[in-house]
Length: 225
Ligand SMILES: Cc1cc2nc3c(=O)[nH]c(=O)nc-3n(C[C@H](O)[C@H](O)[C@H](O)COP(=O)(O)OP(=O)(O)OC[C@H]3O[C@@H](n4cnc5c(N)ncnc54)[C@H](O)[C@@H]3O)c2cc1C
Image (cartoon, rainbow, N blue to C red; front, side):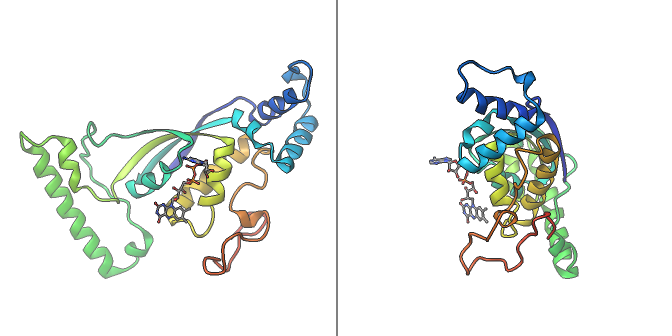
């Protein structure tokens, strides 16, 4: 998996703080005149008060490479975002190289079965797409969840906060959790004030899950497992 923050709103912390200050000023304030202390003071108040719409003014675009279709299906369930995903209708997967979960990779018998099936998938996909009357959009029906994909995703900071709460949690599936943690590291560098305390709910306080779903090992406040 490879994740790159390819673009974001310039000065995301300041942009969100500026939007917030506009709500409480007679005129639109001068953004450039806002000090770092002022930005921190405003965003801290905003977070406490629940006036979270102001952080929607900061957007972040990621290029996500070499993840499974299983991951992207979970990712695109997050509706307040924009996506552009590699097409299986237009892109011919010439080098079929599936994502392998560690649990399968580390189990000799499981790995053998997985590899055999993937080899069969590869052969069948190739055979189908070589037939004149079978287009790629139909040949792809044999491709599994493990198929590699690339996707561009844009989310604003409010949606990212929500995404991190769900997907950095230890209950989230391992691959999307890995992605969420990588995205969190990237946005923390770009917008340290907005994303201070972002992540699974246990980095901020008690786990909101019921006893049945509590993982028993909350993440520490410094982000370590
Ligand atoms: C551990 C885990 C297990 C899961 N298991 C399953 C599963 O078994 N089956 C399954 O189908 N899904 C499953 N999901 C996916 C889950 O149901 C959500 O589809 C996904 O997490 C997207 O989150 P969301 O709907 O809160 O937020 P987003 O789509 O990211 O939206 C953000 C927020 O906007 C608001 N919002 C968005 N759209 C609407 C709307 N139409 N109406 C009102 N408010 C809206 C809500 O407040 C929402 O929380 C699972 C997710 C997790 C984290």
